[in-house]
Length: 78
Image 1 (cartoon, rainbow, N blue to C red):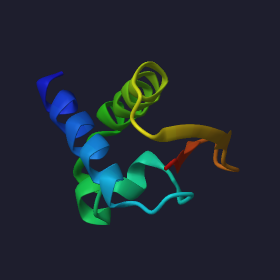
Image 2: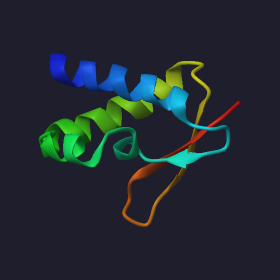
Image 3: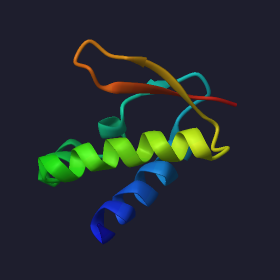
């Protein structure tokens, strides 16, 4: 769980590099090879934790619709 907490902090921190109105998936917050190295179970847990974090904190991230692949989309708010 400690590794997933570190990944969550990294993902939240990375959202500061997005422009206002920019949509994204959690996996977009990591370089492709880094995302692929995260075990599938941890990626699923990270997605759930990120959604929970966004819903409970004022972090300028909005919850958008789900993409065609069923992944939750987010949007950077101003």
